[in-house]
Image (cartoon, rainbow, N blue to C red; front, side):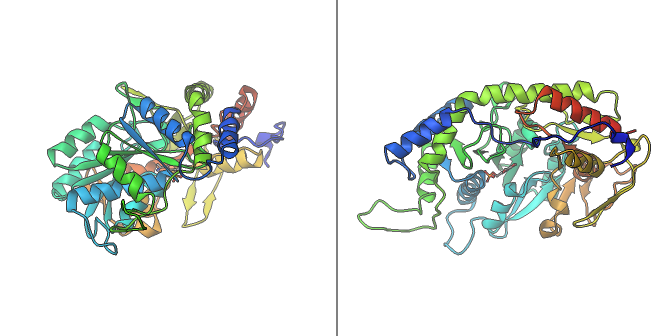
Length: 427
Ligand SMILES: Cc1ncc(COP(=O)(O)O)c(C=O)c1O
């Protein structure tokens, strides 16, 4: 380690990006399930956690599932059936259909489109929310007016401009699948995320704002959709004396043990959000003299502050080249880059993470269409974003951005050291 970091001691206990924070109630409900022998995919914990989630979001129904990805798959399957009708078991409901989808997100947002045989068309990101750009979406509808489904994710707990996206969707008779996996507890114009989609989901993955150790939920106001998701998630058994199957089902239901963890976490959602907000604000204050900006919070949104991120000013980036799996950078006085900061943090036992690598840059989706505010953009992979290239906001944020340690068990003292380390990266 170079002399810029002299005097800083390695954290004895790792400072995590975002780890589960348990409170004790989880154990109570898990134990209750075990003692009563309700350990499978039915039981009070499931019923209660579904009730708590639907009340929090303001939806009529919630269905506990094994993961957010499972919830997205069923949401997309339902959307496909509604739009194009039921399909034979070996044919996805979206076979050959284009679906507009957020570009800068985790690939779990996108994969279920492929599970259903659809073709994701990626929509560029906007700088002011780091979410799907309504302008790029408009452009995409100009090019593909017949598209009928939009899958929208909210990045790092900050809602996107969902009312603008809804307006555009309605103008084209398109449905919205809302991926609120990262944003449970966040609101837009006073309304909770998870309330905006024709089909909406949240995740209880271990690193989320609250966790079930794993798990996710489908949330809806439609009783019919709620029943359908329950049925599909339990192998699509028909109501018959034997195992009768008329359509393709899955083993996607949440277990009553996982639901016990969710039930135990629910009372702490607001506390987690408050501590994440403090972390975000302390970074914002502590880094304000550096050539960096925090992930933006647009007007009308109240994020859950799941992850605090920064993006480095263009002229403060040191030379930084990424290949498919490796990276090279050259440290320069007054400058830094995401990899340098992540490397240095790791060397002190603190965990950060690069921004989600945009889907249009991923080898498996690189040949899919990518639409920016300027139209279809082709041929961009890992190239550095040159000055003057207005489009491809996703690639630019990936290039210059990173997620900082955002664990709600990080102490103020630890966060101050992280802030100090980041300052020294720019020395
Ligand atoms: C945006 C987004 N969508 C979907 C998922 C999938 O959720 P899960 O891990 O519960 O399957 C995640 C996180 O894991 C996510 O961050």
